[in-house]
Image 1 (tube, protein in one colour):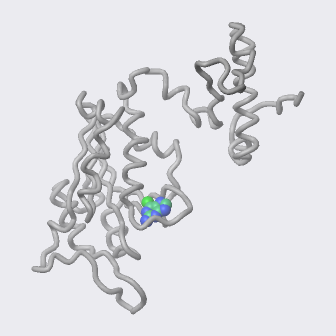
Image 2 (tube, protein in one colour):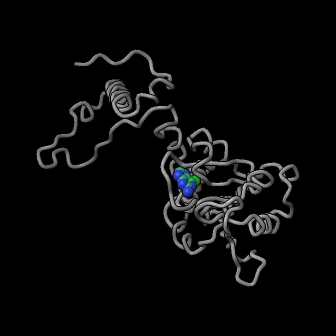
Image 3 (cartoon, rainbow, N blue to C red):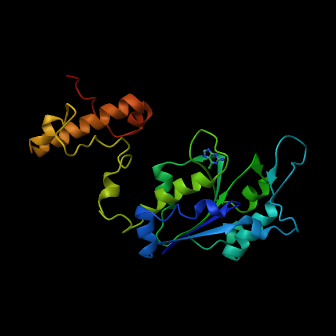
Length: 243
Ligand code: 6GU
């Protein structure tokens, strides 16, 4: 079983977010266990302060290192990165991290693994957390969130759905957008005509080779239009001839 622990100053943020769909089923099936730890429970002072003003001056507050060290020590029984048991990752979610992509998700998705996810807040977090605790600093994209909590949900979802037996349809992850480096092909279902918008003829014909070719062409077309950078990195042969 995989174990994911989220360290946050807003534990209530996660009360229902993991109770739906694939994540709920994976938890119920014992494929993954998710724990949420309130960093504030490890604040030593009587005001339970988890942040303070930055040394050197400047705007905003900085998350203190001690409560985070104590929380990680409590969960793992050690604070030394070198001593983590094999398969343990301590992730700091921060806009200054390595961008999360499907390859990194796959790397993190270990059916017997253990991941601690530290949600950064405010203007920053004491650098000693990165220096001594963290194995991976990760960002979910080039935009700024007010905290790592939404990113923790994103990352957790992406990891869990890749665990063996998490998906109802075993082959779905193989067919994912991005598993071959480009977008998924467009899908249609009933009705064949919706307000004058027709389902493409080729999909109704039952010619599987033709359907396959059409889907690949559409997937490449759409990827090229929206994410040219993906086409350059993907194993995509000749551009399809435009009709
Ligand atoms: Cl992980 N945290 C914050 N605060 N902002 C982000 C992010 C993370 N990833 C992208 N923007």
